[in-house]
Image (cartoon, rainbow, N blue to C red):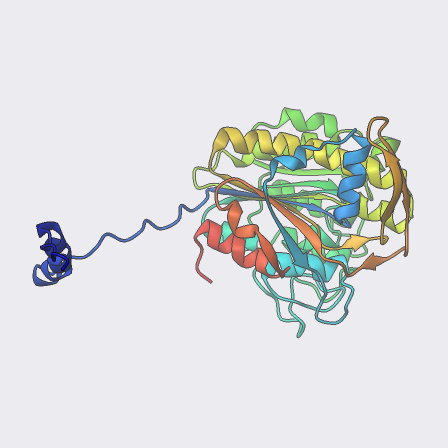
Length: 367
């Protein structure tokens, strides 16, 4: 017959421990709330799908700065009106959290204006900025600052820049501000509102603080390979230099607009040049984020363009062979890369509208 062991005193204490807490009305400590980020830098490669990323990676002999982002997700890009989105609806979904019709800018499917993440940041005292290698009034940057029924209302979109407290914006599109059908010169209004106006990339270095409007080209900037050079990287570094002076932090959207244009043209070299230019800028942004420690960087796209397929290549030689299935956008999911505090929230598969909600949560803003 087995001998029954006596219960140890420690067992009795474990049984009575919850009762002890109840009798003394004590509470177990709660987990600390997740840390909110100070800055968000959203980088949009217009038209950038997985194939565009790997084409750039191949041309760069197998690596990109983008690979430093270890938290990766996929975004569904369809719009409220079409299986295949345009940049207006795609940009608006990311900027406002609302699916809308193709061609819309900062309004929902019923044309009701919706507050953007940039405007929310401004309401909370943060600095804000927009950069693009297109006109600054083009669909994607416009979606973060303007509210228009059509993306083609460029002069109306330019007016909206004066209705916000945006600190820095850099791109093309000077003509939408000073060569208008209403004969109003908005550059004079910008100066009256405290902006320093810059018209050449090399002059950006002269500005150290304050409000900056960099209208560097009358229309759209040229291709990287045809004279634009390092404008995107220079503009990004300048914007960060100025915006970081705000003690409450900042929101900055940087668009590599012409990855999309290379897709529309079905030109692999164009796509690769623009992808590598974007990645060099990503590298500089990640350098800042690493040193800062309180900046969330998100790299994504509004849609894929061209139906790009990689049919061959050589990683050692940096050669890419590719084919296109269309000269327009496609509806494939696009990648989302994230780096910094809160970046793990960007894993998984989700609607493009979720990017807005995830950024709001990262900032700690209530909706």
